[in-house]
Amino acid sequence: KQEVTQIPAALSVPEGENLVLNCSFTDSAIYNLQWFRQDPGKGLTSLLLIQSSQREQTSGRLNASLDKSSGRSTLYIAASQPGDSATYLCAVQGTDKLIFGTGTRLQVFP
Amino acid sequence: GAVVSQHPSRVICKSGTSVKIECRSLDFQATTMFWYRQFPKKSLMLMATSNEGSKATYEQGVEKDKFLINHASLTLSTLTVTSAHPEDSSFYICSANKRGFNEQFFGPGTRLTVL
Image (cartoon, rainbow over all chains, first blue to last red; front, side, top):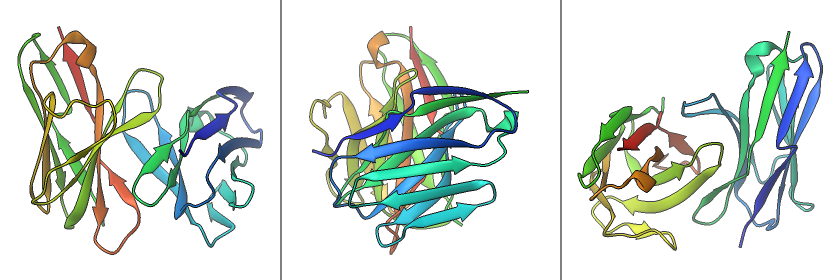
């Protein structure tokens, strides 16, 4: 059974810092891995999707990497801003289901 | 594009009543739709998977008679919470697969509060 864990559970940093969010999964047989952002009381915003054959994806200040063999992904956020404050969820797509991680609550203070 | 909408965005109801939530793919045909629920400060948990014209597949522990799913067309799926109770209060999110894509597109969610 696939299990997805995110570390840390919560993170508070000053504006401008570069930071790394971690996601690990137990079953490496995945089709893709996706990172989402969720603001309080809102739905999901897709940030990056990495196919199983890819190593990384970049969008603006965000960079996500995938090491399928070790069951790990990282989301790198460069030059963090207060507007980046949200919960970040990773999710892995198996043969029939998308399994979500436990989430990292990020707060960036001015 | 791949836009998914949900209606209503927020609903408050009395205990014992039934509530219907709609999920629509606005600009594509969805081969499969998914329903998730999310408790406060928790992650999303898959409730069921539905394919157009067939019965939904429910995850272990999810009561199919409690959470009725109808997938009437390639653009519409509905979730009905029957005889709702306060413990059913949650955030319900749907998603849809676009034909030919292995990616789910998510709706904005529906906040259900049962008094």
